[in-house]
Amino acid sequence: MKKIIKAIGLMSGTSADGVDAAIVEIKGKGLDYKASLITFKKFQFSKDLRELIHKVSTPEYGRVDLICQLNFLIGELFAKAAIGVVKKAGYKMRDIDLIGSHGQTIYHMPKGKPPSTLQIGEPSVIAERTGVTTIADFRTMDIAAGGLGAPLTPFAHYILFRKRWRGIAVNNIGGISNVTFIPAGGDINDVIAFDTGPGNMLIDSVMHIITKGKYGYDKNGEMARKGKDSERFLEKLMKHPFIKARPPKSTGREEFGYNEALKFYKFAKRDRLSDEDIVATTTRFTAKSIVENYKRFILCKHDVSEVIVCGGGAKNPILIDMISREIKPIKVKTSDSYGFPPETIEAIVFAILGYAAISGIPANLPHVTGAGKQVVLGKIIPAKTG
Image (cartoon, rainbow, N blue to C red; front, side, top):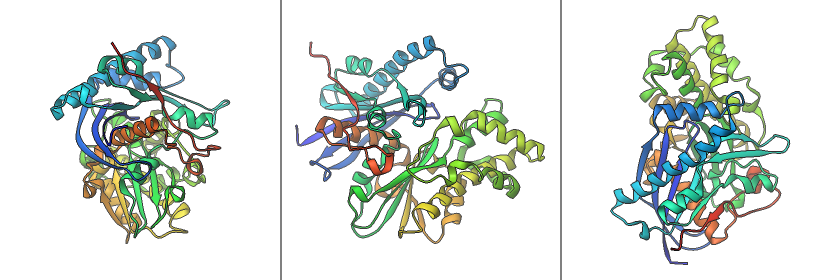
């Protein structure tokens, strides 16, 4: 394999708002390689497509014909995103060595009988349209090995952020929040990682309910800033069993999606909370549930020098301030401090996981996901040859 690899990472999260595409340069071998961001671009989905994805991601409306068609449609959109980010960088597709694509999660059932997960965005379409070998379907092998199929980010967080002299926590706040704790001087087998609960998902769903679909998120925390959180409402939210569940643990829209948000909203309205107070309290719940998990499963045994926040939640100053107040005196920074804008991290992760797959490097952490052994993640779709 070449000494310097250029890889594209593609990701669409639980918000289903579009494709994050990053070009990453990778140097080195084994777990000692370094990854640097070359360029990034977001490719938005239309409102109709976003709503359709959310609709088919529920048992009530998940028709097989729609999912079948969406698999190929989203594959086309992921391919266009790969081509688009290459164009932005001033490269040609022949300059790219591989594409790692997470796809779009439709349903995740790690505790089902049997356990299962489904991400769509057909990788064969991506490989055919781009002419680049594509790696996808990263979660299934971990589940096949007895794991939860999540979180997958800890391997890449370790590559990107590990420090020899201090313990750090990397907190990705996408739709769901997950934390990766890397102890001072620790190797990858010392990493602690798990989903903490809701990230942006509940806040986004509540905003959708309040505005009747006009707004899908609380921009800059503006509505939360106008409200006051309700201790009574917060106490009810904090009783959710996932918050206190011990790792390994993983969650998704099945527990913290639109239906759960609607229940919370109706309860709050019966309590005569204003819309602003509901958003403020939901935001506080996100912050408090994150820090509660730190206290229960990390801070009780380890020293954390700082928390590095990435993902869309890093763009919500009210959420970051609430986390900072809950966890003080530990410093809270965004990944910008390390040269990685928060919105780029998840796409970078899948470029790194794609490289690990091509290199034959196991990228799941069995003590994190619960898998019975280390496995290489992802299915490899070779590029066209003619």
